[in-house]
Image 1 (cartoon, one colour):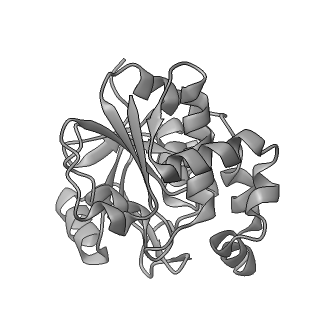
Image 2: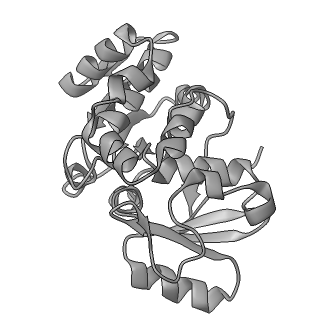
Length: 237
C-alpha cells in the first residue's frame, strides 16, 4: 500500500484522489471537534469552506447548530466555536452541525474527489488505521496545516497513523511520510513535542489550554467518521 502525506490543505488543490482513500487531519481543532461531536451523538456534520455557505445551509434546514471559528475564535452569531469541550451529549445529541473553520473544512473541500474521505485526530488514530487497512486502496493523509503552512500538530498525528499501520503491513511512503513516521517512532509524549509549536502556542495564548489537553489524548474513541453526500457521519455498521 502506498501512503502519501500532504503538509497542508493547499497541497491538495492540484491533485486528484480518485481511486484513493483520503484522511483529513486538523488536530487543533476541527477534526477533533468532528470526532468528539459524532462520538457524543450528533447526527451529522456539514463542513463548509465559507461562513456564508454554512449560514445558508443552516437557514434552509431550519434545524441544528452553526459552529466554527476564524483565527481560533467563535464566529459572531454562531452557537458553537471550535472547542471540542463544547460538544457534549447534552448539547448536540441527535442534532445536525453546520461547521466552517479556517483550515479543516477547507481541507475537506479540497479532497472531495477521494473514493472515501475519513476524519482523523489523535482521539481515533487506531480506528482510522484499521479502517484504512481494510481496503487495498492507496492512501493520502491530508494535514490541514495552519494558513497553508506545515503544522507540527497535524503532521505528528499523520506519523502516528503511519506507525500504527506499519505494525500490520509494509507501506510505501513519500519522503514526508517517512520523516513523520520516524518522528512518531521516537515520540513518547505528544505534549512535549507540540508544546513549542506555532499553532499550539497560539491557542494557548488565547486561553484554550483545556482544549489542548483534550486534543492530544490518544485513542480514546473507536470511530472512523466518513464524509459522504455532503456530510460527515459514522459509517453504518
